[in-house]
Amino acid sequence: MKTYLVVWFSSNGSKPSEVTKHLLGMGFRPIEGAYDFEYQWDHEADIDEILNFGDMIMLELKGSDVMFKLETF
Image (tube, rainbow, N blue to C red; front, top):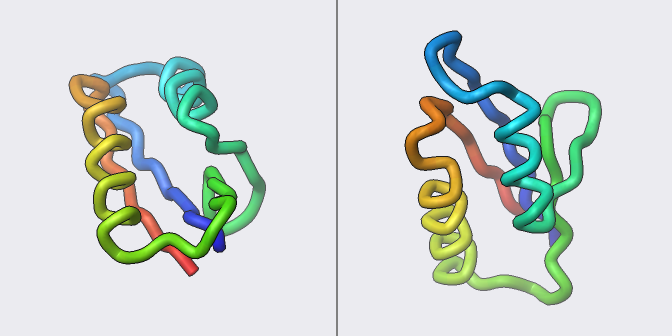
């Protein structure tokens, strides 16, 4: 199971390199293509775990003035 992340940056926000450092610290890895980052789960996560993970991402990126989208499958 994987969670894919798309990040939209603002010219008034944090640098992409800073945002990437935060996401790497959470276990994401940068990828090329339709998504910017990928997180590999070590088990089949349920919807509550995925929502909690989304909350953690939001808290980690708070104040960076970025928006993100998650897709998990």
